[in-house]
Image 1 (cartoon, rainbow, N blue to C red):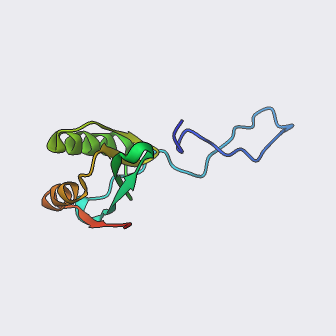
Image 2 (cartoon, rainbow, N blue to C red):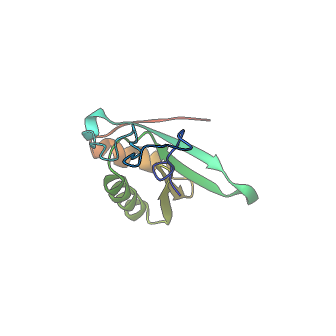
Length: 113
């Protein structure tokens, strides 16, 4: 379940029969242009010494994030996933991902150690 799917409901009970809960968050986030995106590329170590490249900071629709993740997986030639508003790429590909994003017009930088 992603963060968007979780809705915080503060209302426990209402006596109004026509009541409908309205979320303050808009589900239709407009995808910013690549030049306006501030992406950060991390390198994480998983259990067993495996490396994981992580991209976060994307603002926009989930479909656009999925397509960006698919493009990065294809260019790196590895597997990965998109979940919880982050792109996870298997392996140590931080420099390669950074080059791909910059060539695609995104503002991206290394983050973490």
